[in-house]
Length: 487
Image (cartoon, rainbow, N blue to C red; front, side):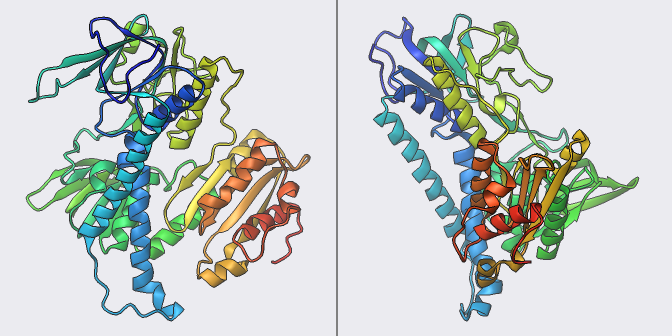
């Protein structure tokens, strides 16, 4: 049965419109699931309450942050590195409004691209808030917000299958509720209208370090406060140490083992009270970014009433085919267990759509890369050395620095290294950890090797073009075997 496209309501609003798949959430997991389902010939509806598709990642996360990271890297190059290349830039100026507009334009190009893909694949975009009822009934409403028009039911769908892709939201501190004016989540930190004099960042994870780096490059004083003993908890220890050293050298003030106990607005900005070694201290700034993690969002999904199994954080429990315990209901992305990564959500969306179409596929998580877009970049896949050691497995490591690579030297980007961890007996790759220029791209080669249970020798004996940064990956693999050539 043909169904309406891009937000149009069914001809008879009182009768549910049948659909093979209804997806609640139009972020990376949801919109990719919709495209794949439509490719497989399934009548597909994607419910998204925001005015644009793409979710947090495209609108207020991955894409805009990378636009600002790139712009500020150019600014820093012109300010500090261009002269070494024989390039004089004259009087350097910053037009922050133009930089922010470019970021918004990049976001707009991406969201329009997703809308085009929906039209191309004949996917209905139901523009409103989706609520899942028993029996796979999905109601779509608009309005109902505080101070706005009353809620109005604009469409109801009877779904053969539902994919819950409702994403996640940033965690607030009880004494620092987001106002996106001075007390910021990732959303507000992407649109500060001025370069802060002092940006306080609570949380030394990916979001805090990336957005802290953006504003530090533009001239802000940035203080990063982390409760745990190190920044980037969960990363390989060697990478953590190098990242900490490099970021401090760049000018970030990093305070680990430090607890934030209070905070709020002042007449001029914000303050936080921290405690380290039992000693309290008040720190004042003009903005504070709270980046202490995210939690699953289940907007429109009453898990208790529906009987959905959930974990301790409220995440919806699924099997390796993304099925929940309720027949015909699947869940993907940040609202299910596992790392909150857009590319993980996308793959889960593909798996869910293909399972619904009857394909014998399963999701596995061994080969999911993790990237931090500071400069130098950080990338990893597989286990850390600490995790391998704790498992009792015999292993070997190999490391090769970018300082010994001709391409990196020619770029003036010789900070960092590539490190491999391999099984001592079989040489199977167990982990790869990188910090250096463009490692977000270099890690894909290793991910492919992981997919095929490859060895360090598989990468080490593969011919890599010269001169390239990828030769560092080859040399690190050879170092795991004790036979690196260029060091």
